[in-house]
Length: 271
Image 1: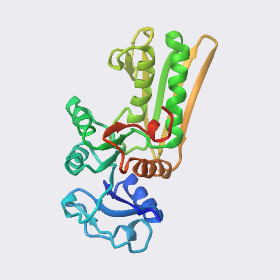
Image 2: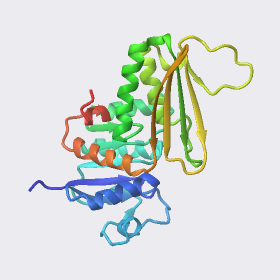
Image 3: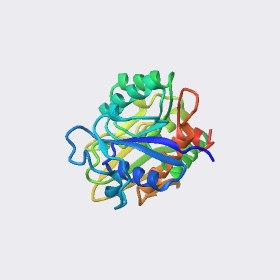
Image 4: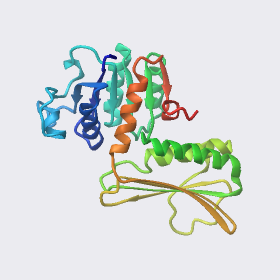
């Protein structure tokens, strides 16, 4: 029998962290060995099992990765950029694979650090771990390549009222896919929101609109709009379990992989 994969979760008490922890506790092919939250969090010292499944697991919420004893094959991170980079250094030093679902990395230096770490350990990084959303990425790529700049590209995304970054990482990924298909840098052709007398739409620009409200888990629509017709590709998530399932799948795939910075497309065989 294959030994279970030893997985640690960073950002354990966030929406995604709790869902991932629940799935790991239910998956016999995985062993959850640590759950970590920021210092001072009220759940530190609490059994994660009693939080996510109402039964003890023997795994207590910690605030320090250095408390981990024993083997760790992969770390799943859904936290905040500063926390992710701190945990990344821990994983890099120990050659532990990592799944990064955190979004909102703003500084060029932050992404450079992730790329450097990928030369020493396996990292799967995706703004959206949903299997279907990653199929959407592929469909958008194929559509953008086929249509070129002859159709106007617009992206509309909606999330819950507490989401702190906008546009979503998924929307930016979609925009980047289209820009790459156009052969243009995204920063040159992205148009974030519109207000007032903005003038006619520029040829080749990619419009990105963000909506926030209620408890919307995540919705993304890409439109390719022409004269007399338009193509819409929409993904609606009604549960975070889809993202959590993708993250666990990525952790299983990444454990033991050669160093590199991978995407969910590689995990799913879509490349």
